[in-house]
Image (cartoon, rainbow, N blue to C red):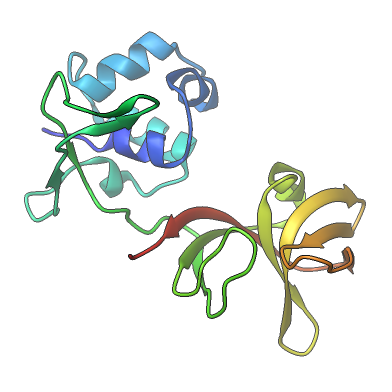
Length: 187
């Protein structure tokens, strides 16, 4: 059985040690590496533990026959494109729990017109996790604020817009925020 553990972990920007620490109870980076490569069997208890640690549905960890994959031709390193030492396949990104999307109509900051941003909704008790990341926060009457969450102060959020020359916005008592997890850009 082929699993998608490595691609999900890398898509979230986590190391083997990060995933190991998020498991309940915590495990070792070596164990996570063995589960990724298939040298250790990915059992149902491991699937449940890892899906909780990564914040994905258990079925997303298991590769299906119908899953589209692409062969990796090369990797881009500091000194240019290089051949792979072992064959590698990657899968397109899959939605995750509590996902919402934001479409970029006009370029702003790091984001280009046409980009799709996949965001993870967070409840108030998890706002601190999103400090120093770009977020979307709802405001009254169907409005939103988008920008870098620079600080949380109780129920107040300090957000620095991505548009140059814009002033910091303070949002209070918002029921949720959403931080960017995946950027989808077509060329």
